[in-house]
Image 1 (cartoon, one colour):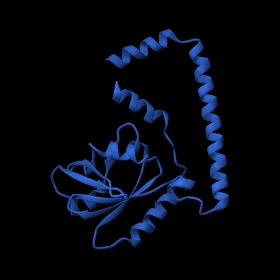
Image 2 (image 1 turned 45 degrees about the vertical axis):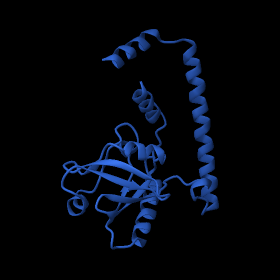
Image 3 (image 1 turned 180 degrees about the vertical axis):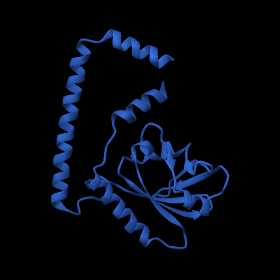
Length: 190
C-alpha cells in the first residue's frame, strides 16, 4: 500500500517546466559548474519527469561514467549542499542511479526542469548542487522583482486551478462511479 500511495502522490503533484524555465536552470547550472575546481570531474544533469516521479531512474552521461566511475555496480554517495549524505546504487551497465535516488529526489523536492551539478569528489562520491527551475523567496529567488511578481501570479492561478480540481473531485465523490471503482480495484490487485 505504501508504494501505491506514494506513486499516486508523485504523479498527482507533477510539475512541468517550460522550455524557458528549463533553459534558465541549465544555464545557471552550467555557470556554477564553470566555477568549480576543475581537479574534480563534473557534469550538469537537467531533471525530467522520469527522474523525479514514478520510476525514479537517473541515467548519467555515458562518457563520464566510462571515464570516471567503476565498471561494476557499486554504492555511490550523493552529498547535498548541507553535507547530508544519500547512498544510491550505481548500475554500471546502465550508467545510472537506481536504489536510493528516489529518496534523494523526494527529500530535495526535485521537479521537472531543475538542474543538478554532479561533482565527483571521490571515486564513489558526488557533491550535488541543485539549481531550481522555479525560484521562490525561500530558495534564493527574487533577483528580478517583476519576475517574482509574475511567478506569484502564476502560483496564484495554479492554486486556483487546484482548488477548482478539488471542488470538482468533491462533486464527483457525491455520485461515485461504483463500476469504475470496482474495475480499478481489480486492476490494482492483479
